View (cartoon, rainbow, N blue to C red):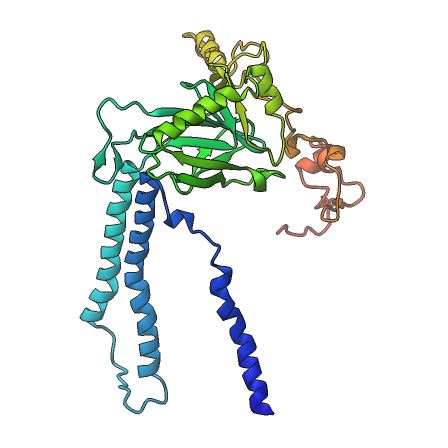
Length: 394
Protein backbone atom coordinates (compact mmCIF):
# COMPACT_ATOMS: atom_id res chain seq x y z
CA UNK A 1 0.00 0.00 0.00
CA UNK A 2 2.80 2.40 0.87
CA UNK A 3 4.64 1.63 -2.39
CA UNK A 4 1.54 2.23 -4.51
CA UNK A 5 0.94 5.53 -2.72
CA UNK A 6 4.49 6.75 -3.37
CA UNK A 7 4.17 5.71 -7.02
CA UNK A 8 0.99 7.76 -7.39
CA UNK A 9 2.68 10.74 -5.76
CA UNK A 10 5.63 10.55 -8.16
CA UNK A 11 3.29 10.40 -11.12
CA UNK A 12 1.33 13.41 -9.86
CA UNK A 13 4.52 15.42 -9.37
CA UNK A 14 5.82 14.42 -12.79
CA UNK A 15 2.64 15.44 -14.59
CA UNK A 16 3.43 19.23 -14.72
CA UNK A 17 6.89 18.51 -16.09
CA UNK A 18 5.41 16.30 -18.80
CA UNK A 19 2.82 18.94 -19.73
CA UNK A 20 5.32 21.84 -19.79
CA UNK A 21 6.43 21.27 -23.42
CA UNK A 22 2.77 21.16 -24.48
CA UNK A 23 1.98 24.39 -22.64
CA UNK A 24 5.00 26.13 -24.18
CA UNK A 25 4.32 24.78 -27.66
CA UNK A 26 2.25 27.84 -28.58
CA UNK A 27 4.92 30.32 -27.48
CA UNK A 28 6.82 32.16 -30.18
CA UNK A 29 10.09 33.72 -29.12
CA UNK A 30 9.80 36.51 -31.67
CA UNK A 31 12.96 38.23 -30.48
CA UNK A 32 14.90 35.06 -31.36
CA UNK A 33 13.08 34.65 -34.71
CA UNK A 34 13.63 38.02 -36.43
CA UNK A 35 12.62 38.84 -39.99
CA UNK A 36 14.67 42.03 -40.36
CA UNK A 37 18.42 42.66 -40.49
CA UNK A 38 18.46 45.07 -37.51
CA UNK A 39 16.59 42.56 -35.35
CA UNK A 40 18.96 39.80 -36.51
CA UNK A 41 21.99 41.82 -35.39
CA UNK A 42 20.34 42.56 -32.06
CA UNK A 43 19.52 38.86 -31.61
CA UNK A 44 23.12 37.93 -32.34
CA UNK A 45 24.31 40.53 -29.84
CA UNK A 46 22.10 38.98 -27.14
CA UNK A 47 23.41 35.49 -27.92
CA UNK A 48 27.03 36.67 -27.90
CA UNK A 49 26.69 38.50 -24.58
CA UNK A 50 24.91 35.53 -23.02
CA UNK A 51 27.53 33.08 -24.27
CA UNK A 52 30.43 35.19 -23.01
CA UNK A 53 28.85 35.58 -19.58
CA UNK A 54 28.23 31.84 -19.40
CA UNK A 55 32.00 31.37 -19.65
CA UNK A 56 32.09 32.62 -16.07
CA UNK A 57 28.73 31.46 -14.78
CA UNK A 58 29.05 27.78 -15.77
CA UNK A 59 32.57 27.24 -14.33
CA UNK A 60 31.57 29.02 -11.10
CA UNK A 61 28.52 26.77 -10.69
CA UNK A 62 30.61 23.66 -11.36
CA UNK A 63 33.42 24.72 -9.02
CA UNK A 64 30.88 25.46 -6.28
CA UNK A 65 29.85 21.80 -6.30
CA UNK A 66 33.46 20.60 -6.62
CA UNK A 67 34.68 22.70 -3.69
CA UNK A 68 31.74 21.70 -1.51
CA UNK A 69 32.45 18.04 -2.18
CA UNK A 70 36.23 18.16 -1.94
CA UNK A 71 36.43 20.23 1.25
CA UNK A 72 33.43 18.81 3.09
CA UNK A 73 33.86 17.89 6.75
CA UNK A 74 33.51 14.14 6.14
CA UNK A 75 36.19 13.90 3.43
CA UNK A 76 39.11 11.91 4.89
CA UNK A 77 41.43 13.01 2.05
CA UNK A 78 40.98 16.75 2.51
CA UNK A 79 44.03 18.92 3.04
CA UNK A 80 44.15 21.22 6.05
CA UNK A 81 46.57 24.13 5.63
CA UNK A 82 45.98 26.89 8.21
CA UNK A 83 48.95 28.91 6.91
CA UNK A 84 47.54 29.36 3.36
CA UNK A 85 47.12 33.04 2.45
CA UNK A 86 47.99 33.46 -1.25
CA UNK A 87 48.08 31.67 -4.60
CA UNK A 88 49.37 33.47 -7.69
CA UNK A 89 47.67 30.99 -10.02
CA UNK A 90 44.33 31.42 -8.24
CA UNK A 91 44.61 35.22 -8.25
CA UNK A 92 45.35 35.27 -11.98
CA UNK A 93 42.37 33.04 -12.71
CA UNK A 94 40.02 35.09 -10.52
CA UNK A 95 40.97 38.46 -12.02
CA UNK A 96 42.11 37.79 -15.61
CA UNK A 97 39.11 35.88 -16.97
CA UNK A 98 36.46 38.41 -15.79
CA UNK A 99 38.66 41.24 -17.03
CA UNK A 100 38.93 39.67 -20.49
CA UNK A 101 35.18 39.16 -20.60
CA UNK A 102 34.54 42.79 -19.63
CA UNK A 103 36.92 43.95 -22.37
CA UNK A 104 35.18 41.75 -24.97
CA UNK A 105 31.71 42.98 -23.95
CA UNK A 106 32.90 46.60 -23.94
CA UNK A 107 34.26 46.35 -27.47
CA UNK A 108 31.12 44.71 -28.80
CA UNK A 109 28.90 47.21 -26.98
CA UNK A 110 30.87 50.17 -28.35
CA UNK A 111 30.75 48.99 -31.96
CA UNK A 112 27.13 47.81 -31.88
CA UNK A 113 25.97 51.04 -30.24
CA UNK A 114 27.16 52.98 -33.29
CA UNK A 115 26.29 50.38 -35.95
CA UNK A 116 22.75 49.89 -34.59
CA UNK A 117 22.05 53.56 -33.90
CA UNK A 118 18.37 53.98 -34.90
CA UNK A 119 19.13 57.41 -36.43
CA UNK A 120 21.87 55.94 -38.63
CA UNK A 121 20.81 55.21 -42.24
CA UNK A 122 21.17 51.58 -43.27
CA UNK A 123 24.26 50.56 -45.20
CA UNK A 124 23.07 47.02 -45.87
CA UNK A 125 19.81 45.16 -46.40
CA UNK A 126 21.11 41.83 -45.10
CA UNK A 127 24.51 40.23 -44.44
CA UNK A 128 26.52 40.51 -47.64
CA UNK A 129 23.85 42.61 -49.35
CA UNK A 130 24.62 46.35 -49.28
CA UNK A 131 21.93 48.89 -50.02
CA UNK A 132 21.84 49.44 -53.80
CA UNK A 133 23.08 52.86 -54.94
CA UNK A 134 20.49 55.63 -55.25
CA UNK A 135 17.98 53.64 -53.18
CA UNK A 136 15.40 55.88 -51.60
CA UNK A 137 14.03 54.65 -48.26
CA UNK A 138 10.31 54.37 -47.65
CA UNK A 139 9.15 57.12 -45.27
CA UNK A 140 6.62 56.14 -42.62
CA UNK A 141 5.38 58.58 -39.96
CA UNK A 142 4.26 56.99 -36.70
CA UNK A 143 1.95 58.61 -34.13
CA UNK A 144 1.20 56.89 -30.83
CA UNK A 145 -2.39 57.69 -29.82
CA UNK A 146 -4.48 56.60 -26.84
CA UNK A 147 -4.68 53.61 -27.39
CA UNK A 148 -3.88 52.91 -31.03
CA UNK A 149 -1.17 53.45 -33.63
CA UNK A 150 -1.43 55.79 -36.60
CA UNK A 151 0.86 55.17 -39.59
CA UNK A 152 1.13 57.84 -42.29
CA UNK A 153 2.71 57.12 -45.69
CA UNK A 154 3.40 60.67 -46.95
CA UNK A 155 4.64 59.66 -50.40
CA UNK A 156 1.72 57.33 -51.00
CA UNK A 157 -0.83 59.75 -49.53
CA UNK A 158 -2.45 57.14 -47.27
CA UNK A 159 -2.69 56.39 -43.55
CA UNK A 160 -3.64 53.35 -41.50
CA UNK A 161 -4.56 52.61 -37.91
CA UNK A 162 -3.12 49.50 -36.24
CA UNK A 163 -1.74 48.12 -39.50
CA UNK A 164 1.82 48.59 -40.78
CA UNK A 165 2.60 47.13 -44.19
CA UNK A 166 6.15 47.24 -45.55
CA UNK A 167 7.84 45.91 -48.69
CA UNK A 168 10.65 43.44 -48.03
CA UNK A 169 14.28 44.34 -48.77
CA UNK A 170 13.43 48.06 -48.87
CA UNK A 171 15.00 50.40 -46.26
CA UNK A 172 12.34 52.11 -44.14
CA UNK A 173 12.81 55.42 -42.35
CA UNK A 174 10.41 55.91 -39.45
CA UNK A 175 9.61 59.29 -37.88
CA UNK A 176 8.00 58.66 -34.50
CA UNK A 177 6.10 60.90 -32.10
CA UNK A 178 3.22 60.73 -29.62
CA UNK A 179 0.21 62.82 -28.68
CA UNK A 180 0.08 62.99 -24.89
CA UNK A 181 1.96 60.08 -23.30
CA UNK A 182 5.33 58.39 -23.51
CA UNK A 183 5.10 55.18 -25.53
CA UNK A 184 7.59 52.80 -27.10
CA UNK A 185 7.31 51.75 -30.71
CA UNK A 186 8.31 48.10 -30.72
CA UNK A 187 8.16 45.57 -33.55
CA UNK A 188 10.28 42.67 -32.15
CA UNK A 189 10.83 40.91 -35.49
CA UNK A 190 12.04 44.13 -37.16
CA UNK A 191 13.99 46.25 -34.63
CA UNK A 192 14.25 47.26 -30.98
CA UNK A 193 12.19 49.64 -28.87
CA UNK A 194 12.15 53.33 -29.77
CA UNK A 195 10.54 55.98 -27.56
CA UNK A 196 7.54 57.89 -28.87
CA UNK A 197 7.42 61.21 -26.99
CA UNK A 198 4.98 64.15 -27.19
CA UNK A 199 6.45 67.14 -28.98
CA UNK A 200 9.60 65.24 -30.00
CA UNK A 201 10.56 63.18 -33.04
CA UNK A 202 12.42 59.89 -32.74
CA UNK A 203 13.90 58.09 -35.72
CA UNK A 204 14.32 54.46 -36.68
CA UNK A 205 15.94 52.99 -39.78
CA UNK A 206 15.06 49.34 -40.35
CA UNK A 207 14.24 46.76 -43.00
CA UNK A 208 12.22 43.56 -43.36
CA UNK A 209 13.75 40.64 -45.24
CA UNK A 210 10.96 38.06 -45.16
CA UNK A 211 7.28 38.24 -46.12
CA UNK A 212 4.83 37.36 -43.38
CA UNK A 213 2.73 38.77 -40.56
CA UNK A 214 3.71 39.53 -36.99
CA UNK A 215 2.75 42.00 -34.27
CA UNK A 216 4.03 45.21 -32.74
CA UNK A 217 3.01 47.03 -29.60
CA UNK A 218 3.95 49.60 -26.99
CA UNK A 219 6.31 48.51 -24.24
CA UNK A 220 5.42 51.45 -21.96
CA UNK A 221 2.33 51.25 -19.76
CA UNK A 222 -0.06 54.11 -20.58
CA UNK A 223 -3.37 53.31 -18.94
CA UNK A 224 -6.60 51.40 -19.47
CA UNK A 225 -6.25 50.51 -23.16
CA UNK A 226 -2.56 49.63 -23.04
CA UNK A 227 -3.08 45.87 -23.34
CA UNK A 228 -4.84 46.22 -26.71
CA UNK A 229 -2.49 48.85 -28.13
CA UNK A 230 -1.11 46.51 -30.78
CA UNK A 231 -0.61 46.77 -34.51
CA UNK A 232 -0.28 44.20 -37.27
CA UNK A 233 3.10 44.18 -39.02
CA UNK A 234 2.89 42.86 -42.58
CA UNK A 235 5.92 42.12 -44.73
CA UNK A 236 5.11 42.00 -48.46
CA UNK A 237 6.85 41.69 -51.77
CA UNK A 238 7.05 44.97 -53.68
CA UNK A 239 4.24 43.99 -56.09
CA UNK A 240 1.96 42.97 -53.19
CA UNK A 241 2.75 46.21 -51.38
CA UNK A 242 1.83 48.26 -54.43
CA UNK A 243 -1.50 46.40 -54.67
CA UNK A 244 -2.08 46.99 -50.95
CA UNK A 245 -1.52 50.75 -51.38
CA UNK A 246 -3.93 50.79 -54.33
CA UNK A 247 -6.48 48.92 -52.24
CA UNK A 248 -6.21 51.44 -49.39
CA UNK A 249 -6.76 54.29 -51.83
CA UNK A 250 -9.77 52.54 -53.35
CA UNK A 251 -11.34 51.60 -50.01
CA UNK A 252 -12.81 55.09 -49.61
CA UNK A 253 -13.07 54.85 -45.84
CA UNK A 254 -12.49 58.58 -45.68
CA UNK A 255 -9.83 61.24 -45.77
CA UNK A 256 -7.65 62.20 -42.82
CA UNK A 257 -7.68 65.96 -42.36
CA UNK A 258 -6.70 67.83 -39.18
CA UNK A 259 -10.38 67.91 -38.21
CA UNK A 260 -10.69 64.15 -38.72
CA UNK A 261 -7.51 63.65 -36.72
CA UNK A 262 -8.95 65.50 -33.72
CA UNK A 263 -11.80 62.99 -33.72
CA UNK A 264 -9.44 60.04 -34.15
CA UNK A 265 -7.17 61.32 -31.38
CA UNK A 266 -9.80 60.84 -28.68
CA UNK A 267 -8.94 57.90 -26.40
CA UNK A 268 -10.45 54.60 -27.55
CA UNK A 269 -9.74 50.92 -26.95
CA UNK A 270 -9.63 47.79 -29.14
CA UNK A 271 -9.68 49.84 -32.32
CA UNK A 272 -9.96 47.78 -35.53
CA UNK A 273 -7.77 48.35 -38.58
CA UNK A 274 -8.69 51.58 -40.37
CA UNK A 275 -7.58 53.04 -43.72
CA UNK A 276 -7.53 56.68 -44.80
CA UNK A 277 -6.93 58.32 -48.17
CA UNK A 278 -6.02 61.02 -48.93
CA UNK A 279 -4.06 62.40 -45.98
CA UNK A 280 -3.22 66.01 -45.19
CA UNK A 281 0.42 66.54 -46.19
CA UNK A 282 1.25 68.60 -43.09
CA UNK A 283 -0.57 66.43 -40.54
CA UNK A 284 2.49 64.84 -38.95
CA UNK A 285 4.22 68.23 -38.75
CA UNK A 286 1.23 69.66 -36.90
CA UNK A 287 0.99 66.67 -34.56
CA UNK A 288 4.70 66.93 -33.79
CA UNK A 289 4.46 70.67 -33.08
CA UNK A 290 1.15 70.32 -31.21
CA UNK A 291 -0.80 72.69 -33.40
CA UNK A 292 -3.46 70.55 -35.07
CA UNK A 293 -6.24 72.78 -33.75
CA UNK A 294 -7.12 75.77 -35.88
CA UNK A 295 -5.51 78.95 -34.61
CA UNK A 296 -3.07 77.30 -32.20
CA UNK A 297 0.57 78.35 -32.80
CA UNK A 298 3.06 75.59 -33.53
CA UNK A 299 5.81 74.88 -31.04
CA UNK A 300 8.54 75.63 -33.57
CA UNK A 301 6.99 79.04 -34.26
CA UNK A 302 6.71 79.78 -30.54
CA UNK A 303 10.39 78.97 -30.03
CA UNK A 304 11.36 81.11 -33.02
CA UNK A 305 9.24 83.94 -31.59
CA UNK A 306 10.95 83.57 -28.21
CA UNK A 307 14.38 83.73 -29.78
CA UNK A 308 13.41 86.83 -31.72
CA UNK A 309 12.13 88.62 -28.63
CA UNK A 310 15.30 87.75 -26.72
CA UNK A 311 17.49 89.96 -28.91
CA UNK A 312 20.70 91.18 -27.37
CA UNK A 313 19.19 92.36 -24.10
CA UNK A 314 19.99 89.92 -21.28
CA UNK A 315 16.82 91.04 -19.48
CA UNK A 316 14.73 89.61 -22.30
CA UNK A 317 16.64 86.29 -22.56
CA UNK A 318 14.06 84.34 -20.62
CA UNK A 319 11.69 81.51 -21.39
CA UNK A 320 8.40 82.72 -22.78
CA UNK A 321 9.37 86.33 -23.38
CA UNK A 322 6.50 87.87 -25.32
CA UNK A 323 4.96 84.56 -26.36
CA UNK A 324 1.74 84.48 -28.36
CA UNK A 325 -1.37 83.15 -26.67
CA UNK A 326 -2.23 79.48 -26.83
CA UNK A 327 1.29 78.14 -26.37
CA UNK A 328 0.44 75.92 -23.39
CA UNK A 329 0.84 72.28 -24.35
CA UNK A 330 -2.48 71.11 -22.95
CA UNK A 331 -3.89 67.81 -24.26
CA UNK A 332 -6.29 67.97 -27.17
CA UNK A 333 -9.01 66.26 -25.15
CA UNK A 334 -9.76 67.39 -21.62
CA UNK A 335 -7.89 69.83 -19.42
CA UNK A 336 -4.24 69.78 -18.47
CA UNK A 337 -3.96 67.93 -15.13
CA UNK A 338 -2.78 69.87 -12.10
CA UNK A 339 0.17 68.33 -10.22
CA UNK A 340 -0.67 67.13 -6.72
CA UNK A 341 1.84 69.51 -5.14
CA UNK A 342 -0.02 72.46 -6.67
CA UNK A 343 -3.47 71.40 -5.46
CA UNK A 344 -5.19 72.81 -2.39
CA UNK A 345 -5.55 70.41 0.57
CA UNK A 346 -9.31 70.05 0.05
CA UNK A 347 -8.74 69.03 -3.60
CA UNK A 348 -6.44 66.12 -2.83
CA UNK A 349 -9.11 64.02 -1.13
CA UNK A 350 -8.44 61.39 1.48
CA UNK A 351 -8.16 57.64 1.75
CA UNK A 352 -7.30 54.84 4.14
CA UNK A 353 -3.61 55.50 3.61
CA UNK A 354 -3.88 59.24 4.26
CA UNK A 355 -4.05 60.50 7.84
CA UNK A 356 -4.55 64.00 9.10
CA UNK A 357 -1.39 65.32 10.75
CA UNK A 358 -1.73 66.06 14.43
CA UNK A 359 -0.16 68.94 16.28
CA UNK A 360 -0.36 70.28 19.82
CA UNK A 361 -2.91 72.94 20.53
CA UNK A 362 -1.60 76.45 20.14
CA UNK A 363 1.22 75.55 17.76
CA UNK A 364 1.00 77.89 14.77
CA UNK A 365 2.26 75.30 12.24
CA UNK A 366 2.39 75.97 8.51
CA UNK A 367 -0.57 78.37 8.57
CA UNK A 368 1.59 81.08 10.18
CA UNK A 369 5.07 80.77 8.70
CA UNK A 370 6.06 84.24 9.94
CA UNK A 371 5.03 83.65 13.53
CA UNK A 372 7.86 84.35 15.99
CA UNK A 373 7.24 81.05 17.74
CA UNK A 374 8.07 79.28 14.51
CA UNK A 375 11.22 81.31 13.97
CA UNK A 376 12.77 80.69 17.43
CA UNK A 377 11.24 77.21 17.92
CA UNK A 378 9.59 78.38 21.14
CA UNK A 379 6.46 76.54 20.08
CA UNK A 380 8.38 73.27 20.52
CA UNK A 381 10.97 74.30 23.12
CA UNK A 382 9.41 77.02 25.35
CA UNK A 383 11.84 79.68 26.46
CA UNK A 384 12.21 79.44 30.25
CA UNK A 385 11.76 82.47 32.41
CA UNK A 386 14.58 84.27 34.23
CA UNK A 387 16.26 82.08 36.87
CA UNK A 388 14.64 78.88 35.61
CA UNK A 389 16.75 75.83 34.90
CA UNK A 390 17.59 75.65 31.18
CA UNK A 391 17.49 72.31 29.45
CA UNK A 392 19.92 71.74 26.62
CA UNK A 393 18.40 71.12 23.23
CA UNK A 394 19.38 67.95 21.47
